[in-house]
Length: 217
Ligand SMILES: [Zn+2]
Ligand SMILES: [Zn+2]
View 1 (cartoon, protein in one colour):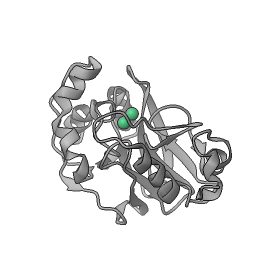
View 2 (view 1 turned 135 degrees about the horizontal axis):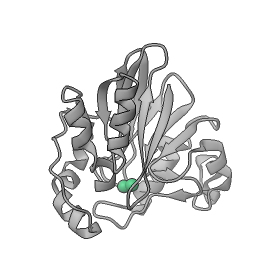
View 3 (view 1 turned 60 degrees about the vertical axis):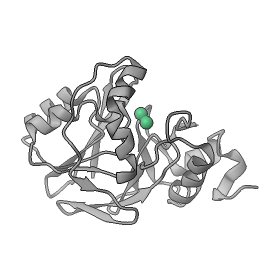
View 4 (view 1 turned 60 degrees about the horizontal axis):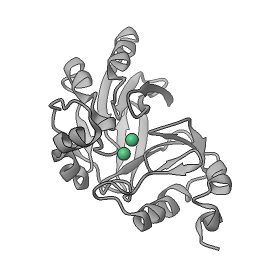
């Protein structure tokens, strides 16, 4: 898999284009403020978008969805159903963050914990990781040591848990069970900031230091 970030907007959000090397199949993950540039790059590559995956329904991760949908109307849109309430509260999210609200196309497919989603010859394993958002999922590549983790964990940080549906204890459990169980070399592409690895965060993330090895010490 080849992962390209498109970063911008008020929240400096990372949207991603993931290409399945060899097969040419491509997916879009979390189309945010930079989705126009994303679509431009996809068109320049003559890429076909097989699907749009939403890690969660916070506005900064979906605000550019309409542009991707306009360019690739047949691409299914995936979201975990537990984030449907957040999805429906998008106008309130926009008001809360002072971002103009734009009507978005509805999700067409429901993520489930433990399922595999395929594009070309590439496969993501879906792990539900609530705490930052109730229906947050992380996408773990079955082909390469990498995962797209949205706002669950950042370089030396974790997702905020003060937004509606957030819960710190739930987030910490998700990090222990769904992130720290991955091999140390796994590269974590997240929603904000540079990529990191499981090993770097296991040892150096100040929120996880009491949990080295995935267990509280
Ligand atoms: Zn978020
Ligand atoms: Zn975010």
